[in-house]
Image (cartoon, rainbow, N blue to C red; front, side, top):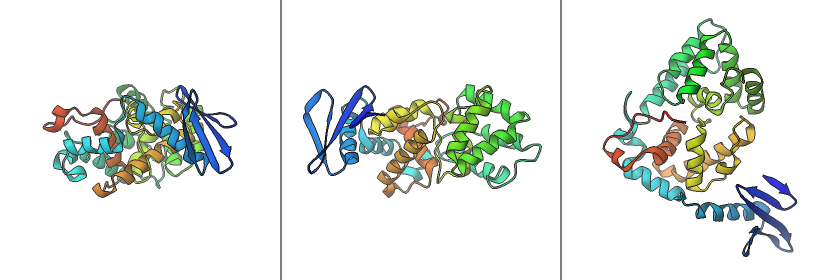
Length: 278
């Protein structure tokens, strides 16, 4: 959050960045002895944010997250226990839901058939990605007369018009209880898992804190393009850091985040069945 000339808020902290004769210099306000310099203001801000992130008690960094994931699944994204099946693991049931959605409710198709909402509902019932409250509310919408309207907003989001989709969802579906990140990103994530990420706020913010990404501070609860752009930036950063493990798409990256945050050490032998909490 920009406070004024040269100042940015990061959680409870303020970063002050000023132009110097050669480049830029910045401090965390109240810690004047720890000055950071760089050639651009963005470089200085990034380094100051990293300093704050590494001081958080939950910080493990991407290397620590990677180590934890591989400790649970030594073969990475090809580990049979990670892939799982319809009741265990992380990959299989999400991929199956994505395949079903892409076949029965294609993002490039028309939503004017009378049972389009029920077809989308059947996909939603294949997963436990949504929390129970959101799942119930979204099920009501998909069973009702405005199913096509909701799916059209989700498609708009999936095809890149995030600003309009966020605005329309908040205006048109707030009373139905589905103007939320989980409801907005669920279908785009399964339609185009190479482009979109499913946003479950609580665990995603916690993961951002663990690896020191600014999403932990950028997040806003009302759907908006800036928060989503920050999420995609973090997703890309994680994907780049795991490139040698060859993640197939954002289903793998979402699962990686979930495993790092939610699995216990005792789950090495018997992984939990999916990520059903917000």
